[in-house]
Image (tube, rainbow, N blue to C red):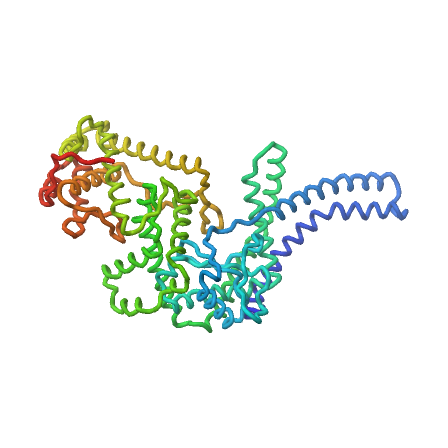
Length: 546
């Protein structure tokens, strides 16, 4: 399939440069064997006779045999290695006929091959992924279509886009990505990509190889050769991909160009809402053994709230009146549930299936099932760290903290208390991870920006590390919120942008931060006591813990 000439020619040139690396490696592996064949043939025909030639023949043969064996071993490792596939939720055509029809029409307008299938990723990104080696891709059936070449890449779409974007915006966003199937069908570019992916996979297999020393040495050698070839062709491979992207962008300019600017603005908004939802809302739930089952629907709520707070609502209602892209799915709720579980596995290392300690939670159940549990467990952890021996009350907590957090108290004080809390929290997390491993749920790796696979749940921090005093303040807040719920008629709630929140008389109380910090950092209890009196909290009453 042809691509815009300038980009196509440049991409093809770089693809050929990558393939020349492969040819040079093959030539180097065959050179000793070729020399041995020439010398043996010369001896057989009587042209290269004598003791010197005989010695040279045997030397060449002795070198050629191990070189060929080593090359065959490296080739076998590369051939058997399977490139990593990004964890996604596969969407069959029966589950999203309208979405498949949109992509098919887009491919027709762009005059490029259709993607072999569509999958969703729980992230704000979209790309084409070659999965020919998995044999899972299903072609987009269309009567009379003749340009669905075997091995066409899978279109991976960021799930937040489907819920937040309108149909026209999604179409404009995906146009340059779908246009990339054209270069994917070019034989030289496809061969170069297969070569690079094979080397990547072989290098990864070599790093993970286990077993006896000879086996590890063999894999180490295969990994060294693979990395050597990767370095030799890295610049050309990068330039090839850059030219392919440029060619796809040029081709896509003919489709919905004006809408693409609007779509890119929505990409930034979707990313902001998704990041906020994961860090402030989903992460607290995951830590309690609950996973929100409608994360993508939550993106819409979070971005609606963000637009309201930032006064971006002008024209906002009109846009939301248009058809959302999730309407292209037959059962958006079920798809959202599958994507939400995958997000929990990718970003937190949760189990693969729901269970007693890993249950889905709907948004209306979030305050009781997540927020209240967080506060109760945090308060229990704080009182345990204080080694409280009698019935825990907020008054006792304030008195104790006013003593240990005072500026004139040496270290064995607030910092030591925070250290105990951190150690207890780390033990709980380790126990949770151990239980997940025993249940047979192996966390999936996280694809990194450079193609590497990063550790599950630790590829990038969803939440920055907290200092000891921040951790202490967080637990004091939990205890205060428990007391407010138990004695002042307050209620746990959900703020779409900030996560767990305390509501009093139907209004969110966001003014608790400063009084808590005054107690946790300065040992000053007066601001918090004033706040408790204003809200009507009884600090002398026992706090119900987990």
